[in-house]
Length: 160
Image (cartoon, rainbow, N blue to C red):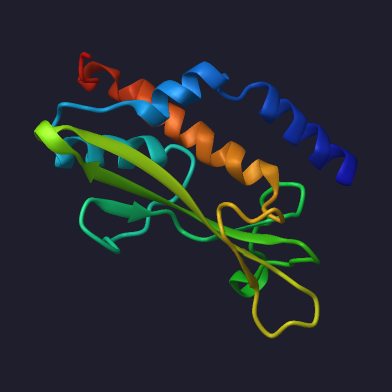
């Protein structure tokens, strides 16, 4: 089973965004109103994640929390909507923020919000984005979403 999960992660990594695409997505500034880019980003995100209703802050939304195995495969909830987790499992949600910049431009920032299951601990351990214990597949998911939003928002990219 773990071999299959590793193979899936390897295939997904191979299909990931190039470093050039990622750089362009991170640096992109858009000329559309924040609400337009926010709705576009929600639509793109909803293709692979469940977007939580409501907003934790203006121009921001988050995905529903999902458990993933240490290697990155989703852990589905079973009976009673309870997920079976194991040492190193990660509960992940992604936050997408539309940041207003000078000159009426906006940018998109995708940030992981991750908690890691630790056997014997009463609560999961928080993983900061720069935490060395953060599994690399999380950054892969963040990068893939950022590039997908960029690809869909290209018509609004500000000209230099």
